[in-house]
Length: 287
Image (tube, rainbow, N blue to C red; front, side, top):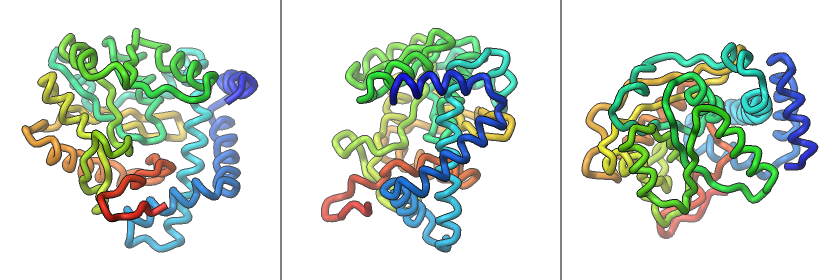
């Protein structure tokens, strides 16, 4: 990312949403046809997770995935630089808002849908709470500074680095600051367990269960869905009976429920990630 790219995104913030989405669609098609290595990752993920799909369905969903990915990336222009009145028109929180307003410690399960930054922006701007999340530094210094500034735009949000460890995160949870957690990626085998994701063993961090158990918190799913008008941020009811004493079983249940969420909008999930890169002993990665 360059300073010129950042200036372009700031300019995009003033455009009508339909123009931004049209630009994103064009960029998504361009990426689909030119970045063959990432296209193969998306299609491999889809073939593994939806074995009953035809090749026509796989290719159609992979094209849509690139379009949604590019549109969401450009949407960060208005999310992080647009007028607040514009954000309020484009970000709609629906569902069980009361789940994020009570006194009980709360871990938000925020899966990697393309609208994850829209979800974060919406709740930090519209809900009267201090929220926390975990941040991984970017190799590109311009992008790193831009993302940090964007995610700190509203609500006195606090971003913990992965090197900060567990203690300050749990302390913030117990103090009443909900944690916006995105645990559904492959973060390496060291701290992960292999549990099914669409029937395929996937290295998955059990952090959702562990943070909830350590802070005696409830788990509330928050799903960000891209719409022609912007984004719907749906707050679902807190999970009942979660967590348990078995972090592996909890993590398998998390993936199972995530599948149900993905099935409602499969093209908006983050299939560009090498979800099955790490394998159980004796298995080769599919990429």
